[in-house]
Amino acid sequence: MNGSNQHTADQVIQASDLSVGYHGHLNVLSNLSYEWKGRGIHLIIGENGSGKSTLIRTLAGLQSPMAGLVKWNGEDVALISSPRRVSNMAFVQSIPPRQSELTVSEALALHEPNQNKVDDLLDAFNLGEMHMKSLCDLSDGLAQRVMLVRAILQDTPWILLDEPTAFFDVKSRQVMWSQLSALVAKGRHVMVSSHDYHLLEGNPDLMSVTAIGADGLEALDPAGSFESWNASI
Image (cartoon, rainbow, N blue to C red):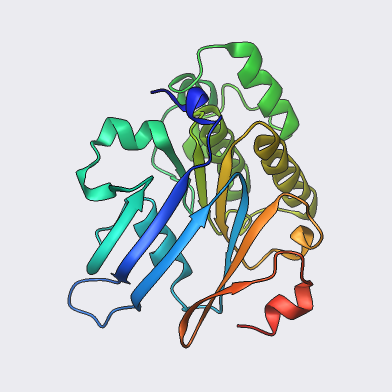
């Protein structure tokens, strides 16, 4: 089943007795049982070092759990082949890749042969003049915008983003949140870990807010305020 067909149904990411971390170290988070479900933006917040990046990478299937399971629509991620993972999940890491010699057009053509669609998204992110630039020659902010465009073009039911706005200016942040809301309108599911979430206050597409605290994960009111969310971490 391709990504476009799956946009018509709600998708579920489930953590079952999940512990995340790195071998040789204490677990970053332990014994988590939680569920993220439904079309919309799912926000994960927490203090620096709370485990946001480790958690979202594990939920994306990029890190193996230290214990427990991550399930996508009831299926253990560890049992899903790499091609099927790529068709179900796009991931944008906090630091864009800097080694690639591919041009922007070459990198995006891997996911979308329709140049008109590519051009429209590049224009939306103010990248219209970057077609022939090598990724390794771009600033971190420009490269991160290209990675976000690539994730959107991947056309998966879920997009997971780890601190995607770290290198963005104010205008780029506004464009990103606007584009993510446009994806939700098309039936996509978005999960984002971020410190920069004040622009999501009052956003009708915000499906859930999950805070990482001393006692694990806490569900917050997505209709709440920026101040109330901050008070919970």
